[in-house]
Image 1: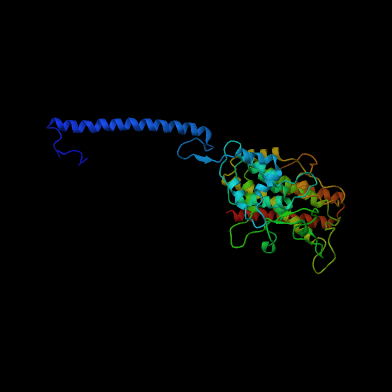
Image 2: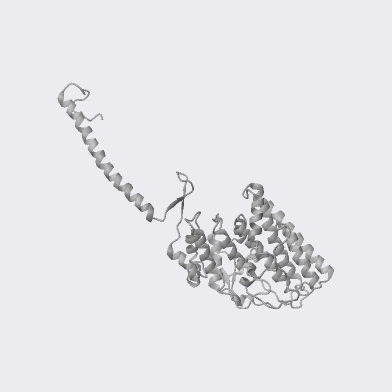
Length: 407
């Protein structure tokens, strides 16, 4: 303003001085009027764009509102095209395309029904093609990529049940996570040939495996990178959601029934090959039953911890929702079975009736199944008691360890 006139400090003596002041003001008003027309046009464009651009604010609005991510029509269509969905999420043997899964899934919020739409895509990409059909290598790798993409993320409520169903679809592989070193694994999935029993009747992928099925090796990680699939961390996140909790709980109990009905009358492995120096017929079956009991204990420990820290605000409502979403109880066959169904069929196992008693007393639900099996199969009392003890111990141990780790 100091250079705004030739008269220096003389603002009021001459007629020319009045003109020099008034004319710039008039010019300013004219410029503002022109700018307002431009601004009005720009606002109109923004309003129109808000209808067409898939960026929406969730919440109540305002400066703190978070943007949501829209799901394109092309992506939605993958839910009805399983082969294309698998191709989209398959990271490859070297995980070179794992970024595609992260780009698709690693978001805090999705617009509208986007989370559910993506859940259907995950299901299509990773689920076996039908009853009695084993998982392919591409499907198993896709399951790995989903777990890796969601590592250390909060999962939207409408996506969580679908991800839980995927974990249940690979129940054998998910239960194995963390129990086998990934150093000798070559990639995110193992071919069916790797499920062959060794000379001791043992295989690191598990027991009673279906022929021709690929397995997701969630324990695999890329050396010197942060790329990996942390199933325990994913389960901890999923357990916040009652429907996802119910899916995982069903899968564990279905696996228990499936496993028991394939054991010998002594609770041993029918495929064991005699080798007293290496193992007994119950060595690996005991380990598997311990792990399974521990995973059920983990779910119950997470529920308890979330109730204490306020993550689950209404424990009664949470439990009621879990009961509504639980499919029922799973009873082992009264005779030994020799079939080796694929993992997807284990997850889809028919129920034997409604789940009775305290749903959240996991040890009671577990022992009810074990005791009935032992009675019907006439398992020797000492062996039945031993199995009960080891499963109870690991159930309690895992509950204690989870609570200790989360303090």
